Image 1 (tube, rainbow, N blue to C red):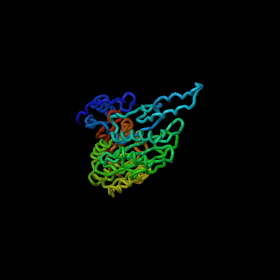
Image 2: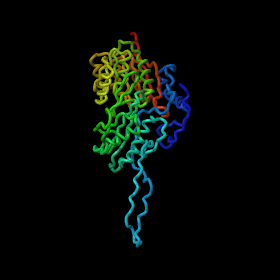
Image 3: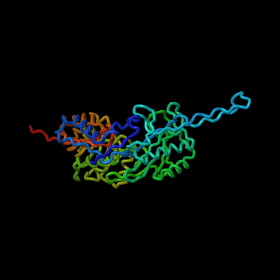
Length: 417
């Protein structure tokens, strides 16, 4: 890995999202190495814990940018009232100037918006879209959302930029279905940001911290973008789960698939599969058969579309809770050779781990965004017939405290009587 140098983020203290952005990158990698070693050294041989894989250029890597909108201070104080010639008082007050529109990121642990125009980790084109939308709101007199009163129109903008395709999806989250002059708004946005290929309106009228609502309509373009990852093409919509650091996702998936040791004969389970990205990579790179499971119907719909789009005939995706699927598969006496698992931050349930141990795949490749829950689950598998062969951390979120790690477990040989 090349030295990334040191850039200065002017928002670091106020924003708080990137705890180490103004420190040498190599120092943050060393700190993450120490954290992973501290968690796993009791379960693995020292040489089984690999140094973290960092980025050559750990800046502007976030391909998904979300910005809220809110009203700020008035741009300038209202002009004084006009006084009549007789000096007896107000003849006609001047109209107050409109409030400025705030956008950027919430300061850590608050709902105070910090203007992060010069953020060092967000995609620069996506960031330009945020400010273009803000400027158009002013010109179109579109009111930003007031979360206390539940009034105003535009709540958030979500921008997703294709890593290799260069396509850009803009999702405008509104507080009402009616969007007057939406066609003109989109036409002007595309003129300002010609790399925008599609615009979607998402309607969220609830008083909630959840960004997206349920209803959507396409305002411009096809309503989705295509992007390439690990040699495959993926359809990305407003609701799709898609890793925000695509450059490191390729590193993560390449490493995981290599650890799986696929040779064209194995049945692979992709648990918590989301939109099927790693399962489809496995299907392309040596799995005889892949079964992907997730309980989010929209994710499985995208996964099936991605499989069709890539011509993957050796993979199927099912809408089912991963715990229930594993338990049912273990009870039925079916077998699997490799288990790929990428659970949420809370880790896997004991029921899932119990079923995994009973099913007994020869290899378990466990991808985690939370090594603290990962080590808990790995210990369970080690206590139930597995050996921890390797731990490979990957720096998916440079300049933050987050660590992604891959653990390879292999079925231990049965003890002789």
